Length: 141
Image 1 (cartoon, rainbow, N blue to C red):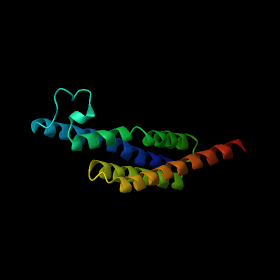
Image 2: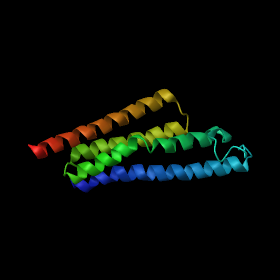
Image 3: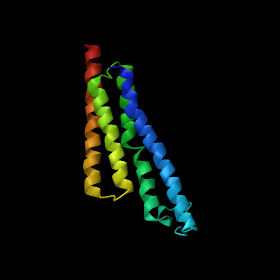
Image 4: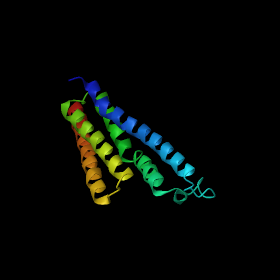
């Protein structure tokens, strides 16, 4: 297996974020066309927009929280030559969890499900961090 495969889940995460921006633009256009936006507040306040817009906007914000650690870990694992099967598997599971999390958050927004999926992603990031720590320790000793 080539270490470069670690970049496939990273690309999935990037494409998810870009896709959410496209969904946000469409939902904003639809809300504006339907007259559902408080024009006086829309430039500053989230509550100026209807719920479907707010859900996607919040989901986009989430893509710049935990996934930032994911990006750093993927790049670090690859750079130290530790992007093996387990790292690729954990990274892939993380990306899958983010796809599911985004689907829940922009759809039903059912928090108990969202929390479980989020915590699974956190566990994958912790796993990646442990793999990096092991690789760094192995490099020193």
